[in-house]
Image (cartoon, rainbow, N blue to C red):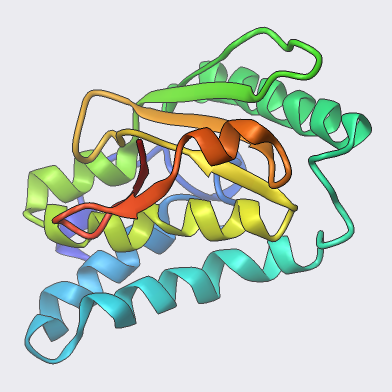
Length: 185
């Protein structure tokens, strides 16, 4: 709790929507757990914890297929709405590119409270375990995330989202970098 005593009191609860109930606190709770249990906890276990928190909501949406224009447009609208909330609360700084038919959706974060917290308190080594869940979430929607950097290892977290059948995904193969981040070429 000492971590949160004077840090970003605007996160979570009714004042903030990001990542649902609890908002960014799920990442901060995992980092706090890691601070205490680092000697007996693996990177893989941290990644599984984050997946168990985030993916249940996406599993309920398996009927969504981003390969279909209706769902792609609806997803774009969801991101545009999220940007408006970010602009109101100034927690995440988010920019969504204009929608273009038959093109991947693009948006980026240039500020992320979880990444800020990790950098401030020395948890950057487990950020890949927390960021990688974005790939798994998109896969549940018949989508592919193409990402080259995150706020934790760069100056922005870029999201290019296309259908899992889109040639764009094949043009940007995924790999894991030396720190454990899932990334694309």
